[in-house]
Length: 196
Length: 144
Image 1 (tube, helix red, strand yellow):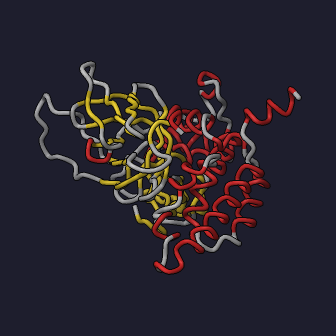
Image 2: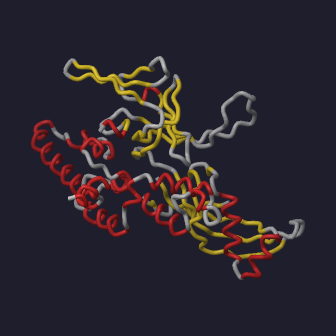
């Protein structure tokens, strides 16, 4: 689910952040703060969601370029903890909502996980209250298992997509999600954790 | 920004949990303020509810060492198993991709090989249960 990514960034340190760091001798702390502001909770295309700054490997520079409002520019090499599940990984999440297209699952820190109807346990149908129900038939007996909201669900990652940022969005459209994970639960051991 | 190495190493859930804990994250969301950001706190909260919070560095290393002898699983699958610690066979099937296809090879040998691979899967499951005991089992042992 998580992996390290090594990046190099030209970081501009504003003077109001530099002054306390340099006085304390803790420039690294100041740089870390700026890195966190830049990367934390942001999605980097094809790398994933940045969870944390793992460590700072080196930084150099500190030159003040003309026209930069006194910001010192440092070239920082650091490692970031990225969240990007690999295709085929099995993850446990919570069902957040369901609609006519399928389920939406959340991990707390990441909610753009969808399980479309075609990837759900078959056969299933949507009940009157909007909850999806799995009809399981064995030896002429039929069992109904419902996929309720807030239940823990184990799913396998089918794909991780990074849709391009839309240039224009109409007012009523859904908020743009930069990283979308599609999961499927049609398999042994998948589906609600309580089933197995 | 320049990406020097897109993948500088995979991390198990336990390693991320340990890293965040050493940075000062706790289960109490109010206690986290100051040392870690709210989003890191959310990740910590998620990992606290997963099997990763019960693991130790030694147990994870031990599992990787002992799982080496199972040739049919890849390193990604070992990572998957450590992160999800399946305790029942269907959960193990879910973590190993195309489990049934790998087991059934040539038609003449299906029955014999099925049994061999099934035994290996059972052995793998026992290894997982041994190295990563579930909290419920630990409580049962305590009450006895």
